[in-house]
Length: 157
Image (cartoon, rainbow, N blue to C red; front, side, top):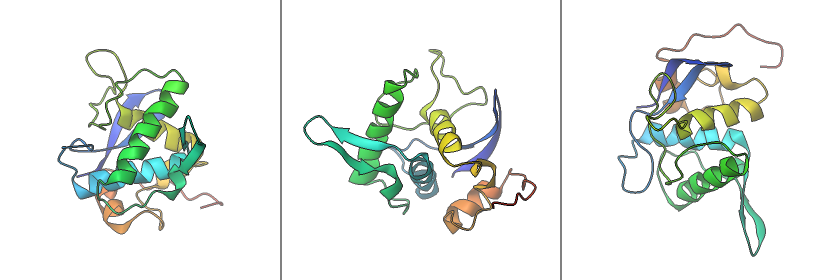
């Protein structure tokens, strides 16, 4: 079950985390998949192929909680996008839960941390409001509100 977690990373006092891995042949718990889909949707990156160039935007991902071909393609595209930015992580098509420090034993960041960062950078300040925002899927909102503190309202939300 997706949840809000307080974390000790610079510029990220909290993240939205998965309880179980999301990816091929993984548990793919519905609200964990919804969280991954939502973070990718808000991160707004593009999947490209060598032959055709840009072919799919993460903004178009369907947030339905089911791990299907589109979600799999977009996780791989997210990995490619992050590799382009030289961020260190393991590119295996799987999004795993992160511990409080955000780093694997190998010293690389978990993808869920990078997804939170990408969403935070692209969403224009929406990150702390995700558990309370009316556009967040109701099932995901319910999961994320546990452990989340409602931020003070701002004029643009």
